[in-house]
Length: 620
Image (tube, rainbow, N blue to C red; front, side, top):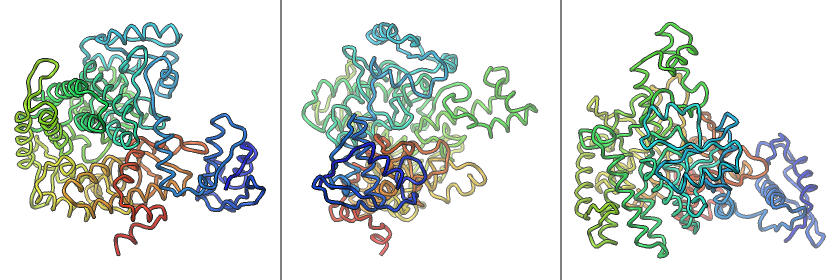
């Protein structure tokens, strides 16, 4: 059945009747009749009924209008498309493209006009070691009258980064033949390439036959390591001293093994860079490598992180200002200028920056303690690096690999590294009595016993024994399973520490895509198919139910207890602000949906499209 529609007339009438709250969406909160008459091309009337079908109609009209059309032929199949199929199709054919950026002449039009710049001059910072980039952007400056090209010093210090805090700008990425190598941004207000987000986005891209884009993101990561010394939190000037959770070996391996079109030379080059990152970023003694042989997050930097929203640190600054017997604003200004020195406050901001380096900004698990912790997540990820390097060398380089810097590595070398790390993790992070791994405070020399989804990363990294896995899965399904998927932390771990304070977005009752994805794969690594299917279904059901009720909304995060995108925590919820149709969703949410559908059994997919309540399916 086909409808030929005048876009503006139909859109106006549809919104006037159904969008009763005037937000340019049709959601379950609107009070319209939820029935709208269309005429088929054959002249027959047809009633489109229900919030979901009406919002689909609105979206199809919006897509056609964005294409410059005045009339459109819309099929009933599109309007009444099963919800899981529609969400997946939108991700594959619309969302990835809308989230793609480049740092070049064309791409800068969007990047430089975003809301992160607060003056009339727009800046791009380029490494002095990137001759091609320097030449390109200095030439490009003539095209943009307000563009200032800043050449970074050869040695980038925390003091230098602080000196440019009032002159924020984008950091260049790889340029080839005057074209920026593309990357995917998280979504919404973001226009930069984020660290660990990119790996999870890459998982979705590979499933959606976008190997070209996934490979490009690996290439940009290698550029960052080569020219900035690390994979950046994101390519903004204020992130120059901060890295992100290490997923590069997994990213390289999965891109390379996704097909036969990538050369062994590319694998050699990217592996060489990843090994360099492992050695220089993570294994430098007394920095991110601790004396006990395990690793921590340790972001360098001076003073208050400048990217945070106004007022974010008011509570801690007020506490110090009160002790100094002066107004908060005066204390803050003098601390920033260096007139006031405070070792205790300096230490607080070291922990805060390190927390942000972990990707979990913010959580009570890491608040004012992050740099003192050997975390389960980081040491699982580095174990995976060591296992991945050994695997790739054995399979593709006959057991011996010569890096592009001439150093030789063997499969056995990396296996020994992984073996050593597992022994250390079992000794310091594993507790058999509690049946789990916990972050280890090496200053206090004890485990924290904080219950976090990150404690299950060893399942994904294949670092635990079968017996350890059995205990982990028991705890996971008992303590972390919510109606909408896996909790970021348990309520028990935050109820005292967070009492009377602002909610932290990486804590209960919220759930996040990367945790779900890693835990699903971890469960499957150890043969826990039933548990994996349940958790996958719960997450997909929540996303699908929410999209059906709220005009296709795919946000950054969810409250997995109440199964809603209306999350009342810091920073709001990116991906919820749009008119008529979301054209981008949110990067790792999109990827989690595609991965979940890829792993879900057909029998459960049918129930997903019917929106069968997971509690009725799995608790009976």
